[in-house]
Amino acid sequence: MDFLRPETLAEALELKASRPDAVPIAGGTDVMVELNYDHRRPSALLDLTRVPELRQWSDGLRIGAGVPYARIITELGEQLPGLAMASRTVGSPQIRNRGTVGGNLGAASPAGDTHPVLLASDAVIEVASTRGTRMIPAAEFYLGVKRNALEQDELIVAVHLTPAKGPQQFSKVGTRNAMVIAVCSFGISLFPQENRVGAAVGSAAPTPRRATEAEEFLASALDFRNPAPLLDSVKREFGELVSRAASPIDDVRGSAAYRKHALAVMARRTLGWAWQELLDGERACA
Image (cartoon, rainbow, N blue to C red; front, side, top):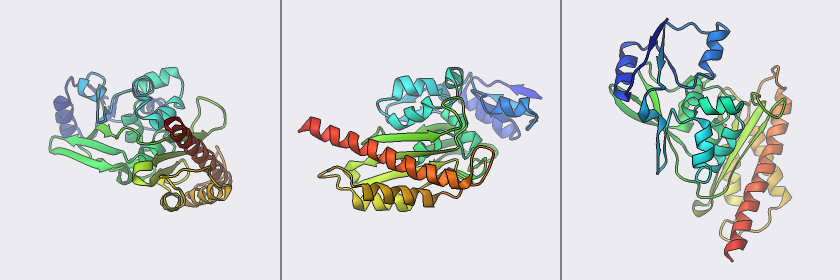
């Protein structure tokens, strides 16, 4: 196995163009597991840890694919609360120090913790090759189980997000409280100024996916200009629509029926938390 170590993004793209079979590795929290269990035996690894362009973020927000979860939590928690919440649920402190959102996207596992937040927050994925750069909306990035929209010669360079314009929440169910792959997960973002909602499910379909009917229902049911306490009927209907958006399977972590039930519960709860945050903010400004 060849081990390629570029020191600039341009060099990394040249290497990927010449060796499309090379598997990118940054944190290595997914790739090394596959290697250790002999699930994958690539002819080359493309180590991206020395590429400084991938480990920076800028206002806007453009987050380099190599920025680890720990930095998202400490440096971007106020601007991207949903992504910070999801990042806190990833593995252990050691994993959060190494793992990256870029790696989560590259693996494209339906159970990846950051995917529902990226979808609900309208993230755009920046990918590049020696041929140029492409901007891919998160909703178009996931093609199937562990399949994404990358071409063979492309690398994930950054994730583009706008600072939160309203409350965001993330919730995850696992077989224990930490160090666990999600049985299912859910992310919600409120956009009060645009009178709309973003909602997405994880680990409950072949790909992470938006709950579009649930989003449309809330956009019509919520009064963002004159927010009032939520009706239980609104929360119940929202939960049912989120559950309906999923198409889960039975596996060792949980049954399809349990996943659909859990998603409905998480949707109701996260909506309640997000809406209460909005109400509290309105009262504080009054």
